[in-house]
Image (cartoon, rainbow, N blue to C red; front, side, top):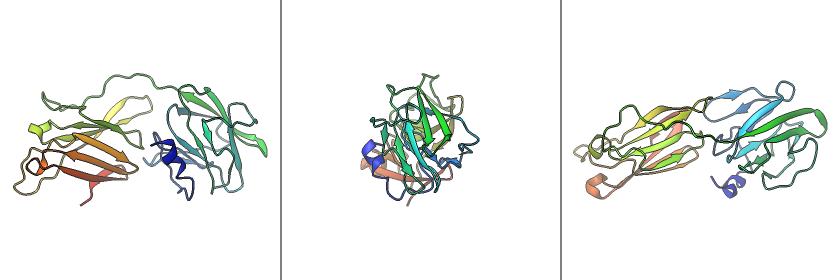
Length: 238
């Protein structure tokens, strides 16, 4: 998601915002993310929060609070890391996009009540062990195309799976930054359709949408499969 597309979501932001390469919704009260996880964070109970570099975060307070974000407590900040600083109530939010060059410590605070503040630390990404599926075979072409969706799920194509029927694997990252396989998606074939599709040769994600290319489907004419994510599961849109 680009910064410009993230900015276009300023108006009418829903009560749930994307986490990961999308947004983290900070309600003070709770933080919600679309994967169903709820983190109960508020100014009186939470003093620190860790966010990842190179992600986008949408932050806003409740109807009675005006929140600010700065790399120095209770001070102005107008740098490129923060867009639309000063969010007034639930109808506005501020966008935080820390890069790998950002300060490692920030402060989210209510200027009208400086006892209400949260220290935010920016964590860098670290290399982890490679992710593999447990059912790979020679010729599966696992990793042919990859994407990362708004839930920080890694989406990996394997168009050679099952004699080029193809498959797409999804991996979730846990709190220890380890990846584990959560889904394997294979195409639904029409009656009499060849099982050579190379499903997973191309992958694109947008919000809750997952688009998968299968260039060898329909007797090499090609086909694109369209899935939606709901409650952590994927279903094909007819």
